[in-house]
Image (cartoon, rainbow, N blue to C red; front, side, top):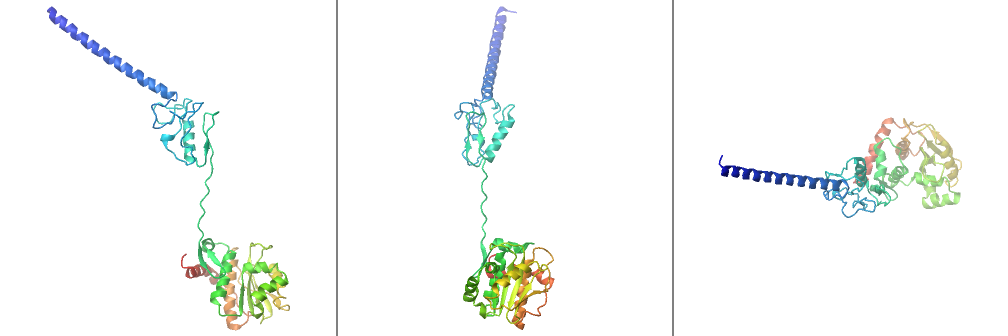
Length: 349
C-alpha cells in the first residue's frame, strides 16, 4: 500500500477516534449532571420540582417547608403543597418521596380537610393543622299560611306528611281557623287553643277572669272547645292530646279521649280550675265514648276531627249529648285535607 494512502487512513482513524471520545465525554458529562440534579432533589432542595413543591424559599430551620395552603381556605393546589427537607422529596417530581408516601399522603389529606387556621411547629418535621368543622347553614323555615293569631311554617306542615305527632302550632292554627273562618259568624263558640289551655291550668281566678271573661266574653258563650295536653308543667310539651267541650245547655264538661282515657286526670284538673270562673260549678264531668286511635301518634288528628264533628253536630242540634263516634276513614283522610287547607290559605306550599 503506498505510504500516502496509509497516512490518509491513519488520519481518518484518528479523526474518528477523537469524535467517538468527544461523544463519550459529552454523554458521561450529561449523565453526571442528571445524577447530580437527582441527588439534589433527593436531599429536598427541590430545584427540579418547582411546580409541585414550595421548598425554594419557605424552608424553616428544620428543613420543613411551610405550606402556602395553610391560610384557612382549604385549597388543594399542588403548586402550593409543602415540601419536606428530611428526605421526603422525590426525584421524579410527583410529590411522593421515596419511602415517604405515607407522610405525603397525610399532608395532602390535611390540605383537603383544612378549614380552619393552621400552624407550623419549628420543633417537628410535620405540619400541625387545626381542623374545625364548618357549621351547617341554617335552612329557611318560611311561613306557609297565617291567620290573625297563628301561623304555620314549613317545618310544621311537614309533620302532616308522615306518621308524626302534631305539634302545638298545628292545633293552634286549626282552632284559629275554626274561630276566624269557618265559624266566624257563630258567636256561640269559643275555641281554646292548646297554648291557652296550658296557661289556664296554672292561673288563679283573677287571671282566669281577665283572660276568659274580660277578653273572650266566655259567659256569653254556650260552648267552649278546649284542646288539653297532658304536660305537667307550664311549658309546652306532653305526649297526648284530648278534647274537652264545655256545654252550658247540657250543664256538662264532655271529655273525648282517643287513647283509653289516659288524659282524664289533666282534663279534670283543668275543669276544676276554670268551672267557677265559667259559672258552671254544678256541671258534670263526663267521659265520652269515642273512636280510639290505632297508633300512638294520631291523638292530635283525633282532636281536630272530633272538634269538626262536634261543632257540626252542635250547630244543628244545640247540644253535645248524642254525638256519634268518628269513623276511621275520617281520621285517615284528615292529614291530606289539612295540607290542602294550608295550601288554600297560604297559596305557596
